[in-house]
Length: 260
Image 1 (spheres, helix red, strand yellow):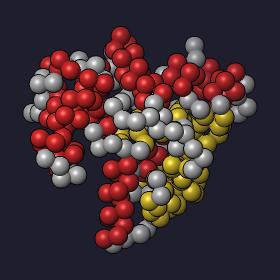
Image 2 (cartoon, helix red, strand yellow):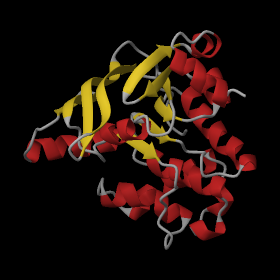
Image 3 (cartoon, rainbow, N blue to C red):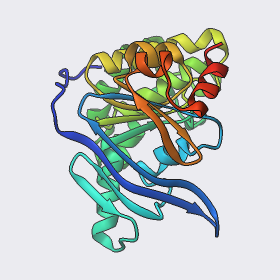
Image 4 (cartoon, helix red, strand yellow):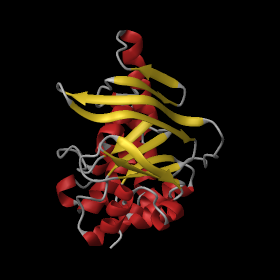
């Protein structure tokens, strides 16, 4: 990433306290989640489908409204239930600080790769196209897609589209990257090119929370692995400990399935 490398320190970049999310009357998806992530730390979240992983990520940048608890990103804190203009301003600050990549790439189909990347800086940060394009071109080079600058998403492979989506998030110069199963929609032969970009981000000190079943990434790059089930953490620790000696029976059952 064409930025100075970020140094790990002891300050939490993300702090989540007693986070709950309830849909409707009784669909309790998150049940009191606590989490601290230090600057430069890589956290991987695992768990069966429907356990609450994606909802947690969406609550961090307020794509979903938390029912209870509080979320803090790089010193900007919001408690569930807050209202008003100050809260709206804080949500905007958090979204600038926390970039997100989804399972589906969500690129604007009528825009070229370079236009997709500069859209955020121009519309959200108020920068001119002229000043935004050079950094966008650096990002395209960093993700290995310089030659796709003027291509529309329909002309790109899934892996290329996801790399453009990552570059688009990085154009906002976030402090945190949230990855919600970024390789799950890709053909197997395209997974590696996206995981490679994620690994390079980690090497350069980006704070990352990734929901992924890419065990190579989790094992080689993650500082900590969390396993979620039914809206709760059931296991947490360094990957070598989680993968070789899980303590919870549900963890052992889940890992036996994905580590085949």
